[in-house]
Amino acid sequence: MSTLHLSFYSAFTLSSLGLAFHRTHLVSALLCLESMMLAMYINLSIWPVENQMASSTLMPVLMLTFSACEAGTGLAMLVATTRTHGSDQLHNLNLLQC
Image (tube, rainbow, N blue to C red; front, side, top):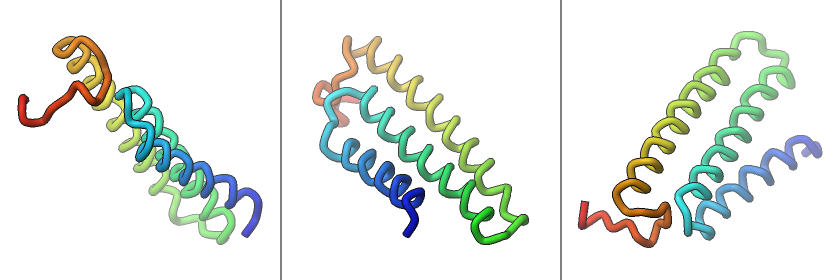
């Protein structure tokens, strides 16, 4: 395993651990999700170059599109919860009250 692969795998692992264990604010959860998507985008962009495949260039573009949609939806949820609940802390949110 090259150091490039190790760095992207560790970035994905650290961001997923941050999402799992540091869930106090919605902003930190969204930031962890974005770093996971960035690591997957870079891995999908480098993979065809390493395997000498020119035909799978559409997958990173689709991943980037879904990542942008996810970021927009997350920011809209952040604004909505901040307006209704007064803060972006996740322990204030209760699914039974919605």
